[in-house]
Length: 537
Image 1 (cartoon, one colour):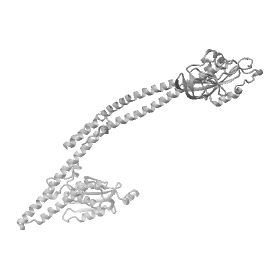
Image 2 (image 1 turned 45 degrees about the vertical axis):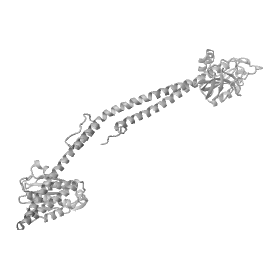
Image 3 (image 1 turned 90 degrees about the horizontal axis):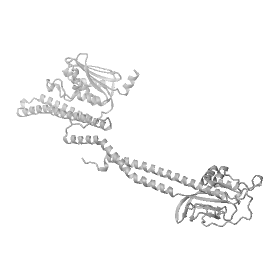
């Protein structure tokens, strides 16, 4: 027997399948983790850009009307920052900024601010920043961050438009008592993403834009960025770690699955080896090992042993059948040959009646063997309605007059579905068996009992011992071995009768007749008409 290829075994398939499933799950989980990490770090960068923009906005709001007020802003050197007028003019820019995109202003060179000819009289600052937040602006970043969150955090352009309307597009609005507004900080009016080059290093950034009004009454936009390089570094590091660990983890999963499946399938391999040995040796008495565990493999081993037991019994039965058939055939053939040889040498001594009888016996035995072979091959009987009572009368009328008389008592129209020829063989075999063992009488009845059509054949002979009730239905079994073969038959009649009964969905049993002999009862399901009648009754 050709062994399967290494990757065609169940063990290999299970290991590869488990490894593939784990790989897909790990890749999906890794992608989800990286996306979540990327989104979280992007949010942190955006918050950092918001804080930087608000802090610079606080500084702008505290500036007066000096011409170099924007040049004096303390802008971070490591972050791209632009301070622009509402018309897009660049007023201030962080040092080292060479290129920028994503803020709407690509200029990187500041335009000087003209000196205001008249400035509003300084009055207390009226700002949208809570008092404690404005006061804390001198303290650094905490004031800017707290002030931004007090104003609602991030916002979009529409809210920026509301700020423009509220502050008159950068023009000082009259306050209570007609006092001008000398400083104000708006909300974050825009978020964006872009690239910037600082000191020759280009990187991706998240940008935040905040409006602010200085003490000269000029409204400006502060664009501040926060680098995404830490995000990219963290994501790349996590991805590299996952990619490095994935093969190792898959090797561990594959190896563990291989060992587990190998251990689980070891009993199956034992069963296979034993079955191969049984096939090679043709010794059906051997059995495969049964694992102690109560799992599917143990059930497989148990079922295999049951199959071997049934196969051994079938082979033994077949061997015995062939041996008995050969013996039974040899006897009439030898007798017939002897008579023909004697008749050929001495014609006046030829026993023609004996030769005819041996020929009939041989023909009958050949017919029984042929029917058994067809039944063993699984031949299903034809399904036609047969009146069992009429069939019994026909078979009894064919009996020779010199044999034990048969009394028939049948109910009319007791029909069953099946093969008429096979059912006739059953009736004939049962009546022949009863006449061989009866002393003076045989009774045959047909009726309906418990919803079944029952054919009962009884005699007044010695009967069948209870211990032999099942054995007499085996092939070539005869309880009266001392009786001559010519009178006793080959021992196939009852075996054929039971096989035919089973193939007609019926049963054939033996008991004790009222007269003391054997009582054989054939029970068959009625045909449709009799079934309806039994239901109505």
